[in-house]
Amino acid sequence: VDAPMTIDHLEWTVAAPETVRPVSVAICTFNRADDCAETVAALASDATVRDLVSSVYVVDQGNDLVKDRARFVEAADKLGEKLK
Image 1 (cartoon, rainbow, N blue to C red):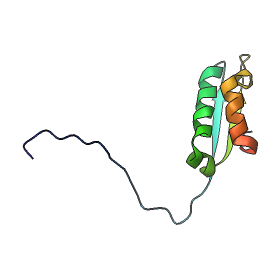
Image 2 (image 1 turned 45 degrees about the vertical axis):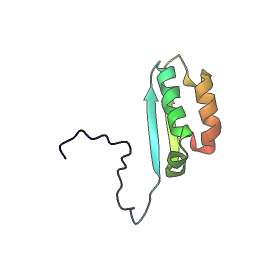
Image 3 (image 1 turned 90 degrees about the horizontal axis):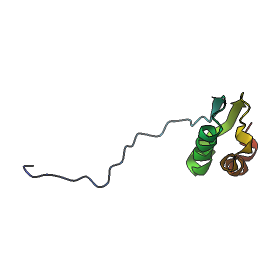
Image 4 (image 1 turned 180 degrees about the vertical axis):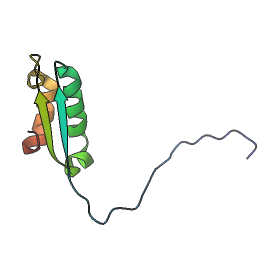
């Protein structure tokens, strides 16, 4: 092709594994409550991720607590018992 091209839709695909295994996610934070809340919210907002993740562990070691953030509370509702 001798002319400029624009790609407007690209998809990366691979064959599905024989067995899909759930994963656990561990997040450790120390006084980065906003960042942690956004990360947990991102996980919770994706239905595919929620289906594949068996547990989300949040270890909050600071005094600026992630559990006090509205985004975290919203995400906790979506994750339910998966959030530890």
